[in-house]
Length: 268
Ligand code: CAA
Image: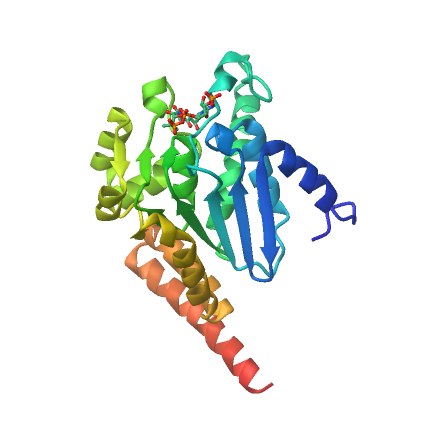
């Protein structure tokens, strides 16, 4: 995909991803994003979140499924704790400038929000620890496939922080406000079985079947008509905030669009 200057941003992107410990591969309709700092349990820095945002910005248009995974023993141990002692890639923003602060956080959240785009289905392939920002990254994805050794933990409140990487909305939508409150304010660990019961994981599989399960799921997702997949995801994302009347109208609009496209294709 060309950048605004008409050039190819790939070399720059590759350098940025390398420095952030993130790997990106795209093969046709499938892209894989790998958190690649296993010696730090894929702890993430501001650079990581910006790199994820860059991937979202430059995602090839033919990608339909994006898989997020972690190298080594864990999906991600969340924020790199060395950042709190000034040892990360940069310090935290200070000062009283609310606007600058908001823009700063929004820039980090952009690393997560693109995973909800209707044009793609995002899959988190989770194993080992998914803590704090790592748990939120899994929550940003459409489908979570969890290995049976997965341990989710929303650790932020225990560290004096709030979960601010887009995780509170999906968490509440999945488990409800009361369970979300209990999970966040105890910062307790949720094991794979409980995660499945709570709906935090769509699949729980033995650790050595994680990759094949994700591959099979990807194949199934790609077998569906691409236009119908995009329109259906768009509809499902709208559903929680729509009234029944609004949602009925949205279904009608999307269906008429589908029928027009299918009929145009039949006529050649
Ligand atoms: N930041 C920086 N380094 C980390 C890290 C983190 N979050 N998590 C692990 N590491 C490092 C360890 O320091 C250790 O380094 P050394 O080899 O140099 O000692 C290495 O990774 C391996 O870690 P462990 O030996 O601890 O590995 P383990 O498998 O026994 O335990 C773990 C793994 C349970 C994830 C444990 O490392 C841990 O509890 N890490 C901290 C998790 C945490 O509190 N994260 C912050 C969440 S809050 C958040 O994410 C906020 C936000 O987004 C806004």
